[in-house]
Image (cartoon, rainbow, N blue to C red):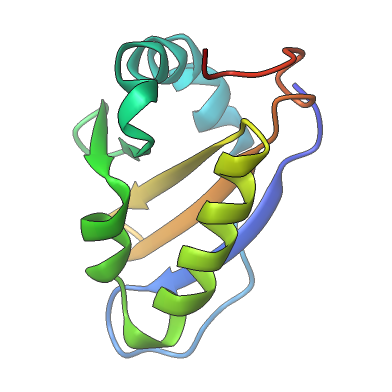
Length: 119
């Protein structure tokens, strides 16, 4: 896979923001399931969440999911989600409850090697 852009790091508690972690190995592990989830729900333009503790991948309505983020990250995440979706990309969140982190990644259609993810 091509470069991944870490957009938002949200610490679930009120702790200081730390340097973003690299969840590339976990994303690679979940990738086939991420793509299946996207293909099944692309017309709804969801966000995709990978829960590391439960080893699950789920799709969520983007507006509701992003609205549940902290006020500090909500507006920026909405803007970035709209930008990436308009270009045919996807937004994936990694939920790492052990380290109390929710971190988003975006993947453009060109990074995925496809003209467009949505038909």
